[in-house]
Image (cartoon, rainbow, N blue to C red):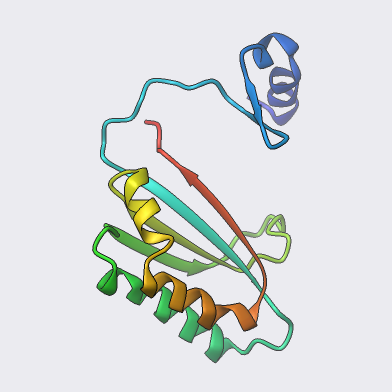
Amino acid sequence: MSISRWTMLLAAPALLAGCVSIKGNVVAPEMAKDESGVYRHVVLFKYKEGTTPEQVLAIEKAFLDLKNGIDVIKTIEAGPNSSTENLNKGFTNCFIVTFADPAGRDAYLPHPEHKKFVEFVGPYLEEALVVDFVPRR
């Protein structure tokens, strides 16, 4: 399906009926629950000008090391943007943290190791973007 067809479909009022708005964002109606025991926490970083490649690597290592100190983390994946579409809006690094469920994420966020990481990375960040979701298959 071409992009213009997708645009027309997404703009169709009939398709938006039943959607809800949360803080100004349109969210699709709930679909069948995923029973895979997977909950994703996606984090994108935009670094301040002057952050060196060595500092970025140290941040990535520290983020990946969180899985060794926070037992609710199933996996963490990390990597720099490699898209050729130029749509990243300055966000250069992506991290995907996998939990068994939202309760795992809820335990992770206030965890002392996570808070220590947030303090460590703070001086280098221009901006962070976070999206959490249950994958549908």
